[in-house]
Amino acid sequence: MKIESSRIVVTGAAHGIGRGLVEAFLAHGAQSVVVSDLDADAVSAMSETLGVPGRPCDVGDQAALAAFIDWAEETAGPTDLFCGNPAVFGGPEGGNLQTSAATWDRSWRVNVLAHVWAAQCLVPRMLRRGGGHFLQTLSAAALITGPSELTYTVTKHAALGFAEWLALNYSDKGIRVSCLCPTAVETRTVQGADHPGIGLVQTPAEVAEITVAGLAAENFLILPNPRVGSSFRNKADDYDRWLAYTTNRLGDLRPPSPFTF
Ligand SMILES: NC(=O)c1ccc[n+]([C@@H]2O[C@H](COP(=O)([O-])OP(=O)(O)OC[C@H]3O[C@@H](n4cnc5c(N)ncnc54)[C@H](O)[C@@H]3O)[C@@H](O)[C@H]2O)c1
Image (cartoon, rainbow, N blue to C red):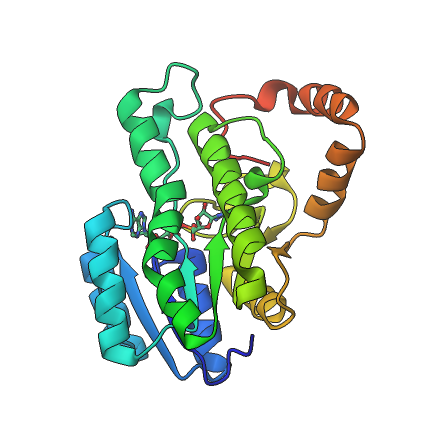
């Protein structure tokens, strides 16, 4: 898909990778970008600064997400590219086997079901219009299990499963799906300088440029850090060897490290 002249909707847009995507889409000549975020003040400030329509929306609330999508299409017209960007980490207990039902429920809603609900709204409309594209911001943790964040890792894997299902069932009908799977990106969540051991740390702007290229190529997987592709291949080649190697390599990194890769 070409960003130029596309009508794009981004959720979780006010900070970090979401904001980087919005800025890149505008720089690449998007016809419109409509934004939302849980953080009402930040989305309002972003709207004003970048001149993009925006309003608050919690993607973990199905009715609110559907209402936002309706509003975005009334405001800017049919959506060519829908970007489902936010996620919740499990919080202090999210790397722990005894994680509460409430934390699991919130993680499923924001990290998995929000992608399903967006597709339920938009796929029928996109099919009538001749096609459309979904970008899901996932994580390397969707492909390769890391040391911590049980709820995050499991739900990111599930979101990847949904993306595969969507692509398999609808790509021949004009629906494209791309999954952005970064490792460490310098945002509010991850501060590379505070964690010198984590290897390549990219900026939201770098990740957004790689994403624009991946969308143009209609790639299903967009991997800003090439190491993820080779780790994923190693895992597929020999699961037992990968499990043994990773268990050994992670060692002391297991909970409570905030990192998933
Ligand atoms: N930063 C990283 O290193 C990294 C690595 C891999 C994947 N990711 C993924 O990138 C995405 C964005 O993360 P980020 O690092 O930019 O985080 P961030 O905290 O910088 O930005 C996330 C944005 O989403 C918003 N948000 C949070 N919950 C929301 C909800 N329920 N509804 C709507 N908006 C909500 C926040 O207000 C914020 O503006 C997530 O899906 C995350 O899993 C991040």
